[in-house]
Image 1: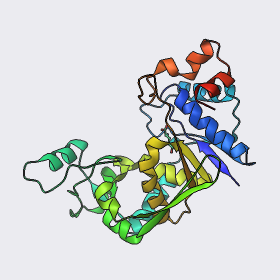
Image 2: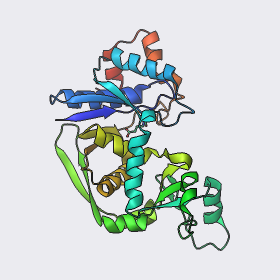
Image 3: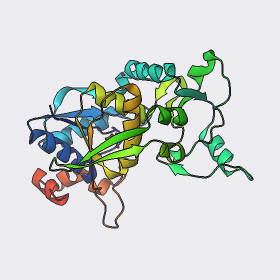
Image 4: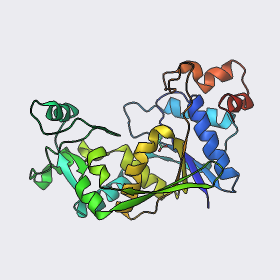
Length: 284
Ligand code: GLU
């Protein structure tokens, strides 16, 4: 069964870029007799709003998209994320970390440090400050948990990142050596204080739980896909196929952001646009 999903965060209006992504995922599944799902990625409760969520459904509905219900909300999935964290932890792949973002920056920029300043998909590569500390168990929930990338990449020497084209034909099956992840991605945070889970872990657990066969999303998330495929391997999940589509840009060539109100679907609707006009605007 082909199953795709659109996974917006309800933190602002849908714009042309979201519409493009949602339509591609929807049409890809429907053209193959499959299912299209919508998942609300509301992990960041401080920014997520139910008003935005209602508007997202209204816009998707207006665009003529149909999806399978019930809708999954990441805010309701803490126990599933905890199971995955525990599994990685039992396998000795996580360690607690007390460092703030500032601590990490200070450590890598300190004079005479041997660390290199490398930006990974998740910000600066962690220099490993807390890796060799022995924290007692009762402290664990008060700290972030990081993936020990040395151990993770020795468990999975290579990963297969399966990319395909929009017409469904296979583009490539990238065999990626995970040893490169130590320098280029580093020990990423998988859960923050009080078990607040990181996006990378949540998205992997949810795609597995929902049986997503094809992840259709923007090229901006391509660097994160390697992390996701690694986590799928470590958790014993099979990996979906990945289709990374072009990004919709504004007139100046910049990628559209939530604050680009002028390109929001609701603005176009107010101006009398029809769903076919939105499709035409994004080249569909
Ligand atoms: N929630 C993410 C976003 O709004 C999408 C993540 C994904 O498609 O995996 O950018």
